[in-house]
Amino acid sequence: MKKASIITYGCQMNVNESAKMSNIFQSLGYEMTENIDESDLIFLNTCTVREGAATQIYGKLGELKHIKAARGSIIGVTGCFAQEQGRELLKKFPQIDIIMGNQNIGKIPQALDEIEHKTEKHIVYTDCEDDLPPRLDADFESQKTASISITYGCNNFCTYCIVPYVRGRERSVPLDQIIHDVEKYAKKGYKEIILLGQNVNSYGKDFKNGDNFAKLLREICKVEGDFIVRFVSPHPRDFTDEVIDVIAENEKIARSLHLPLQSGSTKILKAMNRGYTKEQYIALAEKIKERIPGVALTADIIVGFPGETEEDFQDTLDVVQRIQFENCFMFMYSIRRGTKAATMENQIDEDVKKDRLQRLIALQNSCSLEESKTYLGKTVRVLVEGESKKNKEVLSGRTSTNKVVLFKGDKDLEGKFVNVKINECKTWTLYGEIVE
Ligand code: 5AD
Ligand code: SF4
Image (cartoon, rainbow, N blue to C red):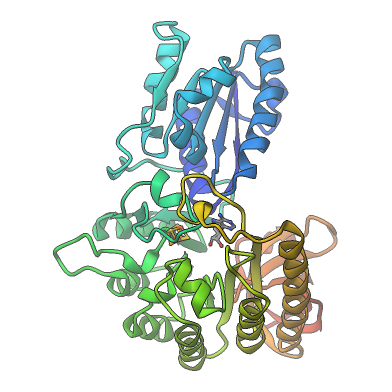
């Protein structure tokens, strides 16, 4: 049997698109494998958010060159880096057979056919970046978690970010299609459904029928089945009271919200084109915490954006200290060619960036530990994910707040919800025992 493998970089959106690619390959008769050495078909699903991504992808392509020479494997590159580079990639790596943007993965069967029958030497599809891609079935690695893209593209143009240039203008998937997918996954027994979009709460802004994110969430919660709904990422600027209310009213929606902060300084937020101030962000986060008791907040934060002074950085630390995020994804600003911030003159020294990142991580780690400790003695509902990877003796699962919990139990509980009483709390992991 022919074998195929997909190497996925980057965000959840790519993970979702890789699941669709996997489904396509299997329907074409390929068996999926993680071992690229035995693959007849190797696809890299790439990311281009950070400039460093290119180096990583070039490294991998170098490796694939040898596999192709040995086995004659077909090599494909998809995702944002492929979309951005297009045909250019062939100059450096002529051994690539297929280059496809995110909108085009539905054409993979056709492309493979042409390559296999040698009607074309290379296939490059990177157009249609502003269309809604065709609906494709996905094969998720997990039997518990499914994801659904609800919007494609982004209209925000945060000045550091390349995404709007690569993924095109924002467009929403019709509500009934999303509900249809949710029903399908709920019926199949998926326990966690993740809604994806660059800015999920601007869902429906391109419709004339009034459908919006709040309505979508409300409709999804009506779908029968015991599942948790998560979504990434909302934009703080567009977070309406209506959405907060819907979450508060519906236990099906996870008590975990990712609310990208990016910076705590109003001056830097403005330079980033984020559309909110430090105070507005804090007010929103506090309102969410008040109206949705027990909610865990997470954020993305960038340090060392052009023009960031020590005082600006202190503003970021101040917000982190005040909001007490459960966890943060913290990045040093990296110059991304093609964005507005890349041309700003007041770029920050790498050493200063590194120092700030270390200080931010130290503060966040202590906040995360404090957050963790609040679970001590509590009983939490946990979705069992299976044996812990590090210790086969225990099961691993996650709470609605997305906390990892380890506990003893039967392997058959995988994919089920159990109640666990927490008796030990470390920064990233809770430990407990199953109770009735
Ligand atoms: N430099 C550093 N971080 C960036 N991000 C996006 N672009 C850049 C950049 N040029 C971060 C943002 C975003 C996350 C996905 O990646 O924090 O929310
Ligand atoms: Fe990039 Fe901002 Fe759009 Fe997110 S909202 S994808 S950070 S431009």
